[in-house]
Length: 565
Image (tube, rainbow, N blue to C red):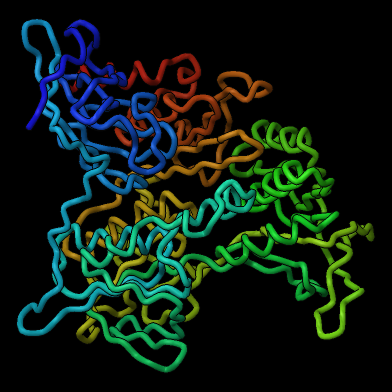
């Protein structure tokens, strides 16, 4: 059964515009996204993103594509399918038409919130011998890779191997909402239900550490000595947090953050601590500082938090001095202290109980000063977790060198043996050094969650034979003291930063200029403009540096779509 409902009058939307509409369906009110594409066609889908439920009407419309305003998942309006993660599923799309001046949608009585991608693959034999695709890593890249294999029709075994004890989860929240306590349980972070993997014949091997990968031979060895052969491999092991190379780094109370257990331990320690020192003004470090202060404020304690870092201005190499200075001021307003242009030279401890490790009490700086600390969080970056992988070409930093399709390179590939071939081993996420298409193919490695989602999905699809090139735009976000900062594109370095808006009010966009072109943007309170910027960057139609601060990017994108139509 279905119902016809009038959504709007024809003149309510111009081509290239969209809005959210609430209508009465058979089971109650239904929120829809109504869009009119640049060609004049009307589209209607579910109103909210399938990632965190952002209202899509606040995003950007680009032809048949709508970009989520929060985390930049992208959906195709004609059929609702997801075209860019981190959306997890497609959107229900509905028949809509213009008739006698009205825009009318046909709604089924039973409307799902999401539509899973068509998983055409199934487990079964091929040529009399079952093929095996291994996804090594259970983070964002691994999760999307396993789904990509099935989505593209791989019909052999798909085995995801992870040292973690959980199903793939939203790791990016470990330093944000989960650490702060806003997300109560680790189970609330998981991306998919057990049924999801069972229905798609994706085998999860949790809590399994891999000690050695022989990529050219198509074999891996587990820590317990067990071996496993594979025909296809997606390497997505992520990064390993760097540890301080100083005396005292093994004291009790010194933490790095990588998994849920690390976040749990930091949160527990913060409730009893009086002085916390965060070493490193990285995104992980600064997000931890924000979460520690939130824990203190909500508990009514007076936990002092000090950030120690060698930088003169936090984030200056990535965001520029003006934006970095604004973030420092934001932290200081919430009680975070800074010791910048300083290095930690030692950690000192005392007072341990019998049978327990000595506990940290002081952080010593290069100038001889000491800071009280019964909790230390180290956030000084990560290294690609690739030391156990053999037979692929690696960059100087340990990243795995891949091509535009994320295929790993085999040294001397013409002589490789079956079953593995250079076309069957891929790398994705933190470990992949890939040619960035918007920087003339410059070798690039980016350690951000959404790019890992993009890479994983593409690597999985290509391992199943899709043959697609990476032609997406990197994006990341950070949440600190209630402010969301979003960043689109990638600038390994920049010559100039153009600020539009008011940094003091934390409503602004910052545009990064490299070689006479705007190559990236960051901002707060500019969600729709930054979603439009992503599409303009993908289309390579970003305004010139001298024009961009005075241009309405949403309107420019709409006009570009009309011209194309």
